[in-house]
Image (cartoon, rainbow, N blue to C red; front, top):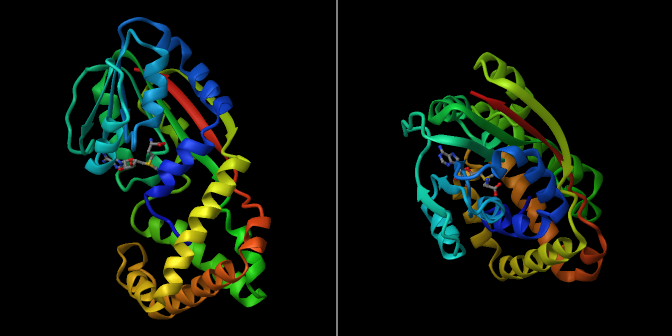
Length: 290
Ligand SMILES: C[S@@+](CC[C@H](N)C(=O)[O-])C[C@H]1O[C@@H](n2cnc3c(N)ncnc32)[C@H](O)[C@@H]1O
């Protein structure tokens, strides 16, 4: 959690999106992808890794990956050489597609969105009659905090848990983002009168050892940078949008705890590398036909 930024999307998809999970997701959408000449849309495709692996499986279909963030779309384009796949920068809440796609899916989108309901509504509208919507959304996730905990005393540990809850769940909720959105999707699909609804829980996201080591190396290099100028780190946190809804006291606690962790990581990297980051979760896969 301490170094949360876009880099982790890239790292986590490249390292933790295991072949086994990929197979499960693809088999859940098998019938939809097997058919020839389908027009398929991924909403909120990020850096496009998932769109690409679907497009490679269904070369006769046409895939479009869209995302609101232009830098992620640029990266997706750079890493794509498939003729049946294109990417576009689009805010899906503002688009009005009508009856255009045979299959529309999202992966870890609605759980992070302020306007999740609007996105689902637009997905429905963008779908052809007889087309399929499919959502893959996290159902339960651990936060991987445990690897920092050995560096902290009991008071600091409980503060860090409290702050994490505030940052990851409570503040997003106040801003209209529900981390529990997945659980409500089946009812939303019924309310939209989708038929042939199928639901599966896919256990996934146990970190591979390779990713664990890679992530720790990355964290160690960032920790070394922070140690060079602690004041700059404080200023970055105090002015960051991500933390802007914490109180001054919470910001101070947060910085003090993070700086203590950073010092410990730099002074004792061996210990840091010996603590396995436990991060796991499961995903709800749900599809329905318009
Ligand atoms: C957690 S990321 C998941 C990315 C990708 N689906 C994956 O699993 O690797 C969620 C993505 O949804 C995008 N997003 C959020 N709101 C959006 C909107 N209104 N229109 C298009 N994309 C959106 C974000 O920019 C972000 O890249």
